[in-house]
Image (cartoon, rainbow, N blue to C red; front, side):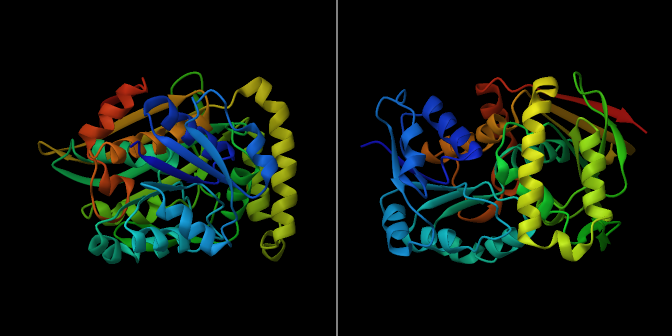
Length: 370
């Protein structure tokens, strides 16, 4: 009997990319969910009958519990996770079903991590924050950390062209991330940071080149200091192409009244306007992503930097790879790590290297002497 995967929110751009990766690299049966029958009409016919659609709203608790019980793995792609509780994860733990998600907000991450002991006792492997960033980016950091005698600083920079091939939900996530200051681990203490502040010009690989990035609240900001206790500073910064999107986002973060940015109607308005704008600029910029992970630390008595970069021409597809590849490892029994864990704590570097090579994702790394 073939394994069965349930993908919640599987008709969205990210969920569809996750489903495509799993269908390409496994023989697994997949059920994807959406809130209306119309969403199921576009389910691919090229999967050889391995993909089916289920009308399901996450508020339909009994129906959700039944769908989870019939699955070997549940993948939660129904964002934005700013609004989500841990109901799905709790059901998976109760029923002994492994779990992945593409969550990207610290509030959800903290709630999920609080269920770690329950997952350990149930023998359930629950890996959160999978995708591209967070996700693959976390593994790039782990790979870098392992090169050092003592790692001291992590600097993550993300760059997305236009919409990144993602839907309106990702736009919502961006604007929701501008609502409040957030804590970051700086020089061994938690400091309050203003979102979209402190621009840096980072040298990304071509075709991106030198581009601006800004402080942005990501789950890695809180998980990396705990995963790697010797690290004194963790910086997470994000930017867009074309650059004028950065300036518009900065205005939303610093000029718009905070009370206005905290209204749902304003988030919806900005998200839809931004998505319409990127539909046009995507024609010129593409929808790719670049990740740069720099780790600074001590090696052989010297302070040096280990820098790793990764490119992909479609951000949504890259996110699907990050999640789908871990799903494959879980289904094959190659990754068993009971508990609720972020990617960097669950995925060893040898398996990360294997799945990146399998999908022909090139990672370029080099040392920089200070």
